[in-house]
Image (cartoon, rainbow, N blue to C red; front, side):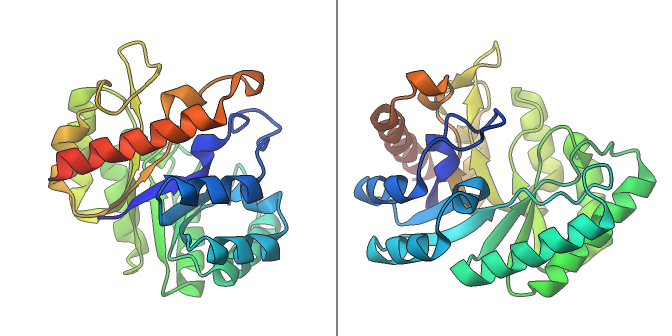
Length: 262
């Protein structure tokens, strides 16, 4: 099991229109200095950077870009065919440029699992991406507000696409103990990567060991790579963001993951 550092964990602007406040060129040396070897990269960090410089910097610091956390829209409501094709071409080029091994995709943002027509388009678009990148794992993240709102619908979606490089990236769609475990039971055979975050009973971000999602029961059931996605200290306004504090918390969370995998 590899533990990846997600660059989004060090981005306080992730959920506001600005999206990026931290320079990826500044984050890479700090991530490497914290002892990490593998990264998942928040695509807006790349889009805001000189990509050739980032490639060189990753190589200089021996950081392997494993997962591209892509924001390509595959839902018809979010992207018409012309835009999807243009975005797909850009995605494929970026994956090849950085030699990513996996791509994270949202499985139809705002698509209800009961919307058969939209689900069909999502399946067709994911299949197009997967066929153009046959040696790359295309991971559909089980994110709420999408087809993933029903665990069984995600299993059906992967079955419908029926390509060996399409699978699931697990995170709970409902941050409660029993639903998270039930989702795991339904989807376990298709999970090839995990995003780690946790919440307290009030749904505020919490440390992995303290939150209500029982990662100590989930992770021992899986033999896949994981990514530290969010940390509690990083969920704050930009002016209050403490880079060093969040960096230290990611290190601490990785230590916890190793402890429950032993």
